[in-house]
Amino acid sequence: MKHQLQALLTSALEHISAELELSLENHPIHIEATRDKAHGDFATNMAMTLTKVARRNPRELAQLIIDALPDSPIIEKTAIAGPGFINFYLKENAWHGVVGDILLKTDRYGRSDHGQGSKIQIEFVSANPTGPLHVGHGRGAAYGATLANLLAAVGYQVEREYYVNDAGRQMDILATSIWLRYLQACGETLSFPSNGYQGGYITDIAQAVLASKGDRFKRNSGEVYSEVPADAADGGDKERHIDGLIACAKRLLSDDYLVFVNAGLDVILDDIRQDLGEFGVEYEQWFSERSLVSSHAIDHAITRLKDSGHLYEKEGALWFKSSEFGDEKDRVVLRDNGQPTYFASDIAYHLEKYGRGYQRIINIWGADHHGYIARVKAAIQAVGEDPNKLEILLVQFANLYRDGKKVSMSTRSGSFVTLRELREEVGNDAARFFYVMRRTEQHMDFDLDLAKSQSHENPVFYIQYAHARIYTVMNKLADKGFSALDTSVPLTALTQTHETDIIISLSRYPDVVQNAALQREPHQLVNYLRQLAGDFHAYYNAHAFLVDDDATRNARLTLISAVAQVLKNGLTLLGVSAPESM
Image (cartoon, rainbow, N blue to C red):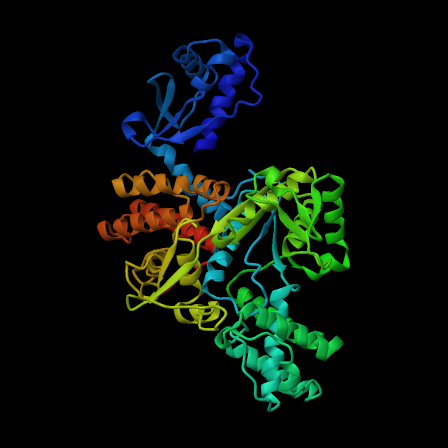
């Protein structure tokens, strides 16, 4: 409907532009649905936005625009309100075209070419491959996948990427943890480090290495703990203790150390891929951090920073002057031992992304990375790239509740609820839906009992039930002795308030999809679907559909067929199924 009004207004402006010496470039036409139907169905403020360039009083300009509007079968009347708003009152049957549009476009209804093929990259989840994905990762996965779907729906060319942190200290901790469990499986008695990865999956990987490689990597515990600083439980420092064990593992194993690095990486990354795939989350690219080293991208990034005059040496290390670009302090990019920092890898990765020609780059990070935003953008700006091209969205952690009690979790100790366990308990649909019900910057309390319930209080069940209910009605047509639905009938029989409200809600769907995409807020679509489902359930409870009068029956069934289509379209964008029976 808004597009038809925009076309009418564009025609009116073209008609009066010569008289007003008015250029229409860079003056988009904004139309909004009114909140109060006393002010019509839609309104535009274009007369006020054009008053300066047109050199006319806004109310006078509004009247000129109204007088120039082409005749239209959808407009009952227009009116000027306030300082110069133009209000549109539509004819009652104007909305009926929405239903036909939905049934004609089917799964394409709500999609647009707003993005015009502009390339957007979304990097999300990117969890360290040091263990299974947990429920916190699940929220980022659902949000990233849904946002990608929304952006693609409004015409952007979207590329989804997972950044695999397969280098650095966390991988060393993983590899050393596996090796220590391997030694235990070989019969060695040793004390496992408090800062090692302690989940049962570590033992499983270690036993798999033993089964395939034998005990040739076995070393006695005396060698392992030689010159290793004490752990925290023995009055030492847990970080120095694990670092000492890593150094010892590398020294004793030499090149064989990579056996444990790769064993952990291969098993865990394969598990992550499978877990996300089963969750309906797919990627065009899995980018390896290791490739930044082999391609010399890190060296190139440091050289660019050096050439731009934003590096200096201090205490044997190389520092980036990030404080000059809004960061709270300068940051090390090259340690005193010549090794690049995590930050150096991140700079190289982002510069590599900039080189791929995206119009927009979106990172979805956990909220604990908030302090990292300024330093990454500082590095991008320092080498002459546009930091505004990079958009960083933060996702708060998700807390699980069962029987009204919070479920405690700790990643390093291994006492966490995995994404797979959550999916198995509540199902993919509930998990995908619940994860995007709130703004991502808000903390989320995930009620496991509610997600599993088959009640109107469970929002995903409520929406899916509306969709299934419509199919149940359709399946009863033959049982009642009625002929097949005829969607070509006029909808003039739709005169009830419930019917008008539903049609207006259906007309809003394309705007909801576009706003949810552009504002990065999938929960807007969630709220819309809940309202549409509520409108349908109220309609279902108030009126019979399978009535004897052919015109009324076909009109009502045509309307609810359109409702089913829009519910399915919206649920599909959320990564949720639209069942035909429940």
